[in-house]
Length: 251
Image 1 (spheres, rainbow, N blue to C red):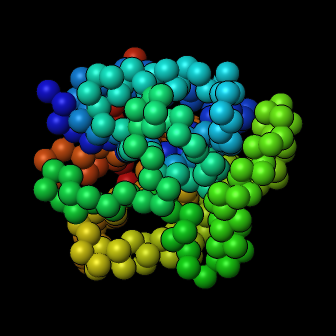
Image 2 (cartoon, one colour; image 1 turned 180 degrees about the horizontal axis):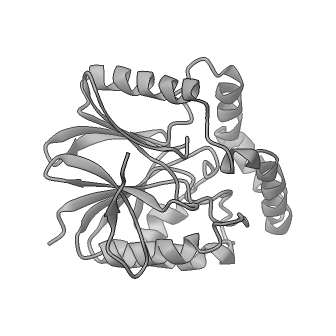
C-alpha cells in the first residue's frame, strides 16, 4: 500500500563527479525500490546540475531518470519538484509529459496530518545578498526565454561551463555558522505554523528537533545517497544501498 512520503535532493546529475559515478544507477534503483510504498516523492531541488528546457530538445543523458520518474508517476506516486539553484529553468515538460507537480519556490501542505514545508533552501540565508540577486536573475522568465534562443548545443554547453565555476561546493561542506543559519531559518518557518521543514542545498544531512518542530535536511545523492522518509507523521533520514536493505542515518 502506498502510504509513505520520500524526500531526495542534490544528485547534480549531468556532470562528472569523482566518487559519484554510480549515483544515477543508485537513484534508478531507489525509484524502483520505493515504488510500491511511495504515496509521494518530493524532489527537493538540484536533481539535475543544469536544466534549461527547450520546446523540442531534452538532454539525452537525463532520459533514464526522466523515464523512471514517469513510470513512478504512472504507478500512482504523487511527485513534487521544488526547484533548486541549478535546475531553476524548468518549463512545462516535467508537468505535461512526466506527470510531476513543479513548485518554483516551495511546497506547503498537510501530509500525514502534519503541516509540511519543503524548499530547496538556497534562499534560507537572508543575509546572502549575492545569492538573492543571482536567484532573481536566474529565475527571471524573460531572461530564460532569451537564453532559450541559443541552440541547445550552445545553451547547454554554456550552462555547464558556468555551473562548473561553482563546483567547489560539491567537495566541501559548509561551515558550522552557515548550518546554524539554516537551523535558525527552519525555526522561523516552524514558528510560523509548520510542523516539519525539509530542505536541501547544504549537502549535509541533518535531522533535528527544534523548539517549534522538526527540521530535516536531505543531504545529497552524490556519495551519501541520503533520503528522507515520512510515515505516520514522523520523518527520518536513511541511506540507500543498492542490493541491500536501507539503513537509518546515524548522527
